[in-house]
Image (tube, rainbow, N blue to C red; front, side, top):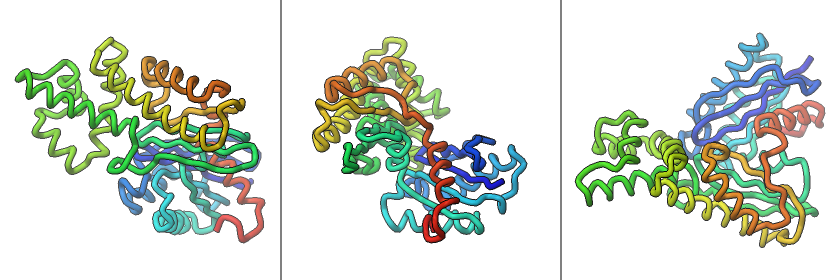
Amino acid sequence: MRYVLGFDGGGTKTECVLMDETHHILARSRSGPSNPLRVGSQAAAAALQQAADRALAEAHIEHPRIAAVCAGLAGVGHPEAAKKLHEGLSTIFAKARVCVLTDLALCLAATGQRPAVVLVAGTGSAAIGWDAGGHLSRVGGYGPLLGDQGSAYDIGRQAILLALRARDRAGGDTPLGTEILRQLECPSWAELQIRARTAADEVFPRVFPVVASAGGAGDQVAHELLRDAALELALLVEMIVERLGLRETSFLLAKTGGMIGRSAFLDAELDGRLMRAAPQAKIGPLPVPPAEAAARVALGLVSAPESAGN
């Protein structure tokens, strides 16, 4: 029996699936972030290895029995980043075929159909799609300094900024500001500012659940933040739909990422805007979770010619 590993990695977490050649899932595991542009190639490779070790330990399978590995990762659109992660995985799994692709490409493959569009809403934000002929288009995914509008990172950054401005005006914290400090376990805004400068990815995305919870409780500031995020995310999809000429076409519009399903208010706002951008689309989740889709890609490497994958 041969075994493969599939990874789905981003700026907050890494998910791993261990699968055998009969497509049976033997184990699932998680570890920390594996986006090399955010945490560096060495830390990304370490997160992948940690997730793999946990899955293999659960299934009592040793590393040498892994025949192929596929990792769909945010941040590997740059060739140098992809090369370093490929080399890292090839070192960890010396006997396995290795494939590294972007998280967007992995999500699109997970739809299993054409045409299709995928919206990724997590630590970062992006959209990708292809038409019936396989013509590809993608937007967003430029990282926190240049883009990622509507992402968890973006919402967290804006929420903190609004809380600080409100504190400047009123001389005290708003309920949302108080909850942000509590959830981040920061004794003061001065401490939070230091952490934001030195480890932004460990601060801003973690504020999103606070905003989501506040939105569910009716907080108007949270509602405004979530409405703005829905608008930005829908704009990504609208650009893909216009580029590919899909507005009057029936297709799967899949949503994925850590923000989806975390806020009923955001989900409703986003779906409403997506329906206006693509009135014929079937909006729903990915048919297959990305890490599982990666494992299936890895299975394809097992039976592919020797030149594939490596």
